[in-house]
Length: 470
Image 1 (cartoon, rainbow, N blue to C red):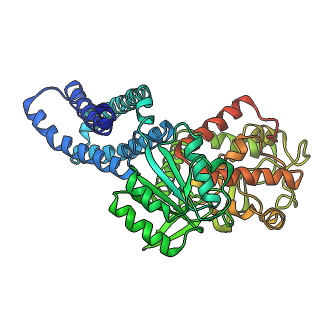
Image 2 (cartoon, rainbow, N blue to C red):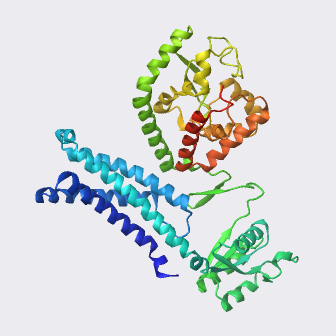
Image 3 (tube, helix red, strand yellow):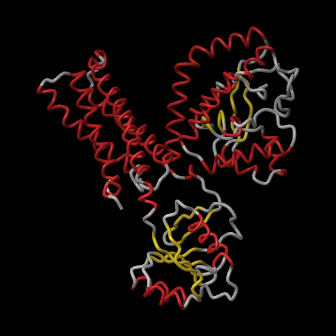
């Protein structure tokens, strides 16, 4: 492997630390001057901030497996680390005031920390871009460095592994041989088949093999013990691959409970405490910004207009299904005339219950704004499956297999289904099934970048207009 690729992780770490310190020193000179006493004062903050960044990057593992991770994953982890690092910077800033808020009034300290954070962020992502370009130019050298592997056993897993390693040009594995004890040899394995599992031992001794993939079932317990022993003697790593396709035909996640592996057929990124905490922090920060800078002046205006144009309350509170199917009061600006069917009947196109102002509120999604208070209270998230009326949850749970799976998550103000055209009235069970499918996909593929994309598309659709918003 080229030396530059071997050192890429270290280059990444060192450059990040350099640009962080350069940003701090530059901003310190710019906003706080070059007084010798002040320069000595910056040293403790340099140490605190550097250790803060090292801790955050270690927690999010932004440098791990940099050579082989895709660019979306690299930037995703970097963004999360950068945002959390911002919270650390804010704490250091507050401590640096030392109860003297006159510093803040002159704004020199505030400018110092704000511009340090901004400049570091820009240089951080420029560094990522440069290193990704270097990696891309050297990709052919990475791809030529493949591990020699053999596959033992014959079942669905062994065939899938063989196809995956042999058919994927980006694979880092070179399948040298296939061994199994079944009489029938598949057509695609004839070129690789070298005999029964017993013959694998002599093959290990006579060939350079980096790893063995032993698939179960298909190899006896005694045969596995012999292969593991011989693999250790020949400096070959031994991998055991269980057969699970009869139970989980899709993706599988494996957790370790002490030394017991437990499989689940549905990956849930938000089951990870770090992901869940990060999403909650984002929800709190985003909802506070909206409440303080938008709702503080817009809600009184809309409330007055609702009162003038239609008798009844300003807010419409409705029990809806939340996470774990726990009911909560979902808040909306009232867009309909007060009616007895509000808790049972969905809004339809040209619904006579909708007021003229309500039609505008629903078309622009302004009626959903009070749900930012739901987010702040913890009942909802910014992004997630839209909450349904309790009556509809009971009905569709009996009709759609995976309907209740969506309740593993907090409901959202907007969601993956909504930005993909699956919003509004559900006229048929098929319409609801498509929405549920999108919600389950979001549950299995959550990432912070996906949330940002959904938020952007939601805002875009508001300005562009949505035919299903009524």
